[in-house]
Length: 149
Image (cartoon, rainbow, N blue to C red; front, top):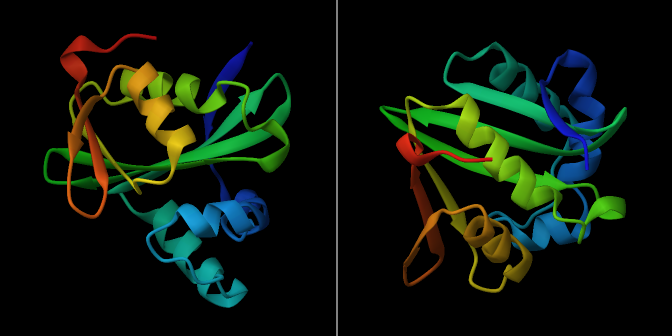
């Protein structure tokens, strides 16, 4: 499977809007409400222009199949990702979680996942992130000194 990450651009706004309002994505998000398009546009513009946020589009050959975002706070990168509903169950989440580790060798990365989001839990585990159970979620952490693909 030839997976690559490309940096998102303004033209990806509508694609990410569609993905973020997918029913399963909303269910697995800590804020499960549908996202308003105008608020999304403002949010997306602020993220694209921020030095503390990086959004990547996951490409399978020439097809956009998912996204991964890193929010940088101090020396930590907070991970948020989603996979297009037509490409779930193929191991793409595991692959992009590995690829993002290679892009951020100067940061520890953290993903926070709801207990019931089994596919994401498995993806983080298969990617070698360290599992840390919390009351309201599961936290996955990696030190990128041990990054692998």
